[in-house]
Length: 219
Ligand SMILES: *Cc1c(COP(=O)(O)O)cnc(C)c1O
Image 1: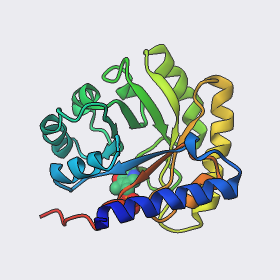
Image 2: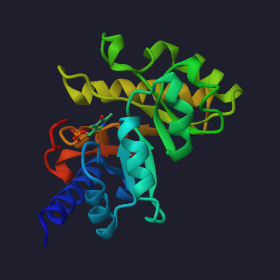
Image 3: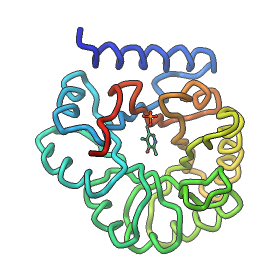
Image 4: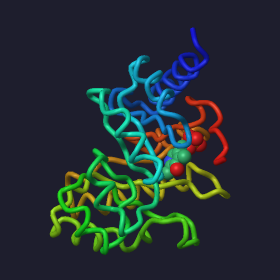
């Protein structure tokens, strides 16, 4: 078995174990494999192992890579990085779902798209995401603008307990579903903290290095 297949199996087993601990059906959890910085061939290798959900975070890299992989039928591309307003419409053209919708100015360019609202759990506005107290207002603008809001996305802050951070997302989600009953999904959990995310209700994990191995450096 290849190292890639071994790492993929190990993460699948980890997801199953965490789901059991949480009393959840592992079938309710989607693992997105984050392939940023990796060549298209790695995506092909993962596709051959059965992976269909892929994540990319930089438009300049994602657009040509996804075009090159157009023959991989049945894949869904998740855009998980910060969105530049000028590029948002182009991202919407290839992304099946966007995890980083976080401001009013993106409503127009993303009309018709499926989105997660990204919430910012840190004090640093540079990290992307809307403040938790503004989630519902942004959701209402999104609905008026024709976006399909599926739920919330968050990245655990660098310092602090990931589980506590994910609990805050779950609380924000409970408020959001009163405004948008269908927005129940939770995109949270990466290589180092996906078990904690599953304990707090994650439905979409964004896992890179634990499956792909270390990312090539930016060059
Ligand atoms: C890169 C990235 C991930 C995956 O991170 P790993 O630690 O490699 O699993 C998840 N989410 C976002 C937003 C990312 O940019």
